[in-house]
Length: 337
Image (cartoon, rainbow, N blue to C red; front, top):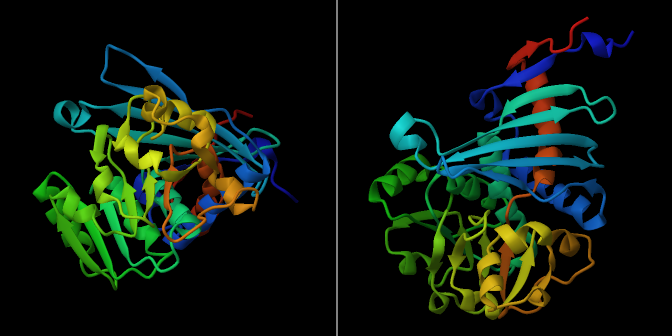
């Protein structure tokens, strides 16, 4: 006899519980499915909600969504506090992910969203490279060496056979830590540098994962045929790329409603360097065949990824299933009898 919903328990998962449940290749597949559902219109999702308080440096983000396949509903509550590390010994960004049963609304799981977000964010760059980069791409540049770079290197390794991966940070200490962790894990050569131009020049794929509030990647560093996954910008005023790059690129976004205000295109749009007519389409439209992706080997392609809630609802069912099978986490009855 099937267990009564009233007797069901909610699974509570910490960051360490979440780690290793899903492989990098599976994160890529889940995010690709999220974009596919977006391209087919088989979802419900509003743009990311922001709550900004002048009292504290940072913001909250609310990200609810429903996806048809795998049928799932989830909401992520993201806290960003710029002074956390120096004042409270806490991460700058952390999040909670709530996974609910679509028909009943029952809370199946309450999860730490930090590791999950690192991996599904990296997977967004990987999916864009799979669909928009040149097939002969061999050199990957990652701009930034923080947590998001961890997800990028893990997932991008699943979509191309790289000869060399270059990583930049302003901090040599950060680069040393990144290299120590990853140097012997992959078949490619890993090179780190504090010289951003040296890292970006000649790369076939460039993934930017910084919180920059002004262009740091110069136009003259980007060669014809380069694919850029601009992942860092996710709020108004954020910008990583010289606006002139966008003027000569074929531009794709994850969700135009979010990107016009929060994504890499938000500043060039406000400055009048580009218009929405210059956006070729959304990545989901490329995946389902509604919009053509790269049109030539010399074309520069840019993917503006703000991170959409569908990535969470497409990924958490597999994480939940694996957690149940592994017996990790704590179960708690949330509804009284």
